[in-house]
Image (cartoon, rainbow, N blue to C red; front, top):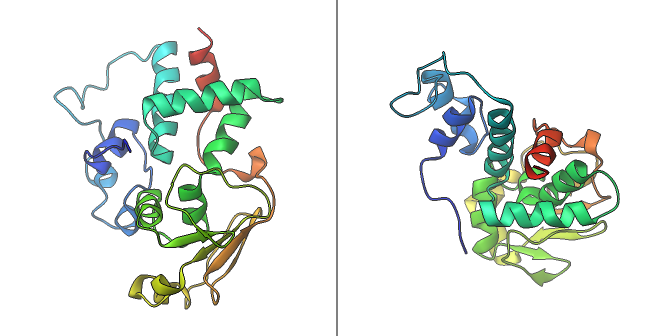
Length: 207
C-alpha cells in the first residue's frame, strides 16, 4: 500500500496553509506554517516568483491530494471515475474523496487527523456494518455504520472520545457512548468544507 512517508509539515508549508495533517500540533504554537510561513527549500522565501495559470491548477491538485492523503496514480483514478459519473466532475471528485473510510473516521472525530485515521483503519480498529475492514480507501455509502471494535474500545485513545463533544458534518451522525457513527447521506458540495477549488483540477486534467 503506497503512502507518503515524508515530513507532513513540509507539505503544509509548500501549500502555504494548514492542511491539518498532524492533529493537535496544527493548532499549537509548534505549527510549522505559523513558525515559517514560506515554502520549504532553497528558494522558499522567493516571493517574486510569478505564478502561472498552470501553476495555480497544479497547486490546487497537489493541495487536494495532500488533504486526503492520496498519491498521484490513485488521485488520477479518482478523477477518471468522477468524469464518468453524472453531474459535475469536480464535485464528484470531492465527494469520492470525502467518502473514503479514513476521511469518514476523521470526520466522525475518532481520529485527530486523516493520517491518524488511516493508521487506525489499517490496524483493524473499525467495523463497517459489522465486518472488519482495514482498507482506508474504501468508499462508504449512505446507511453504512462505522463502529470501533469491542477490543479497541477499552484503549485510552477511544476512552477519551466518550467524554468528548464532537462536531460532525450534517451528513454524519455519531454516538460517542457506543463509539459508532452512521453515514446519513452522501455529502453535497456545500457540506464539504475542504478549501479546494475543484474547477482548477478539472481544468488541469482537461488539457
